[in-house]
Length: 260
Ligand code: GLP
Image 1: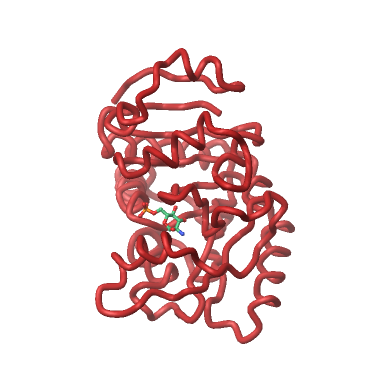
Image 2: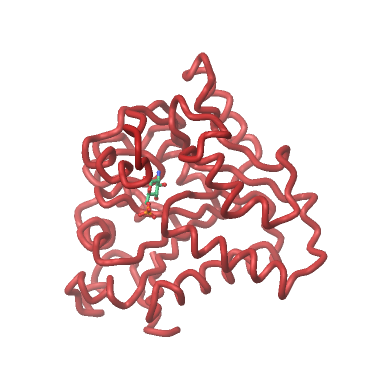
C-alpha cells in the first residue's frame, strides 16, 4: 500500500482525478467506479480535466463498472447509484449507456443478477478500481464479517451503514438490502485507488492501514493486493495520530510526503 497525503480534500480530489486520467492515457479501458460524497468532487475534477485537457478524447473503448447498487431502486430513483453516476459523472462525458455497467437493483432474481455481473467483471477485467471507505470499514457494500473470498452478492446492510445512508434519503427509509461486488471481485482489479477524506473516516482508516487484517474490517483486505494507492487529506492523517515511522514499519506501506 502506498499513501499520498494532500493538504485539503479538494487537493485529494484533483490528484485522484488526475491519476485516473494518467491511467487512461497509459491505456486503461475498464474503470471500476464508486459512489458516495467523497467521489462527487473527484468526478467534478475529472469532468473538468476532460473538458480542459482532453477535448476529443476517444471514449469508444472505455467501459465502466460500478461497485454496488441498492435493491429496489431503479435508474430514475434519485437515491440510486445509477442516478448518482449519471448526474455526477456520465452525463459530463461522452459515454453511452451501453458503456456503463451497473448492478440492477430492480432485478427479479437477485442471485442471477449477481452472477451475471460477476461473470461480466471477471470476463472483461477491471484495470483500475476506485474505492471510498465506509465509516465501519466497508468497501463497496461489503460489510464487516464478509469473507475475503466473497464475489458479487446480496447484502443485508448493517445498522451503522443504514444510519450513514439515511443522510442521503431525506424523506424515506433507505433500502435494507444492496448488491455489491465482493471483496475478491474488487481485489481482482489490476490497480486500486482508495480515497478517504474527513475525520469521520479516522477509525476505519486506522484499521485499514495498521490494524489486523481480517473480515472484521473489509478494507484491510486491500493490504493483500499488490498495487493500492491510498489518498487522504492532512486533517484525516492528523486525526489518525500516527507517526510516519509507524507506517514504514507496517507491512510494505510507504508514505509519499505531504503535498498539494
Ligand atoms: C457507500 C458506498 C461505498 C462508499 C461509501 C463512502 O457506502 N456503497 O462504496 O465508499 O458509501 O461514502 P462517502 O464518500 O459518502 O463517505
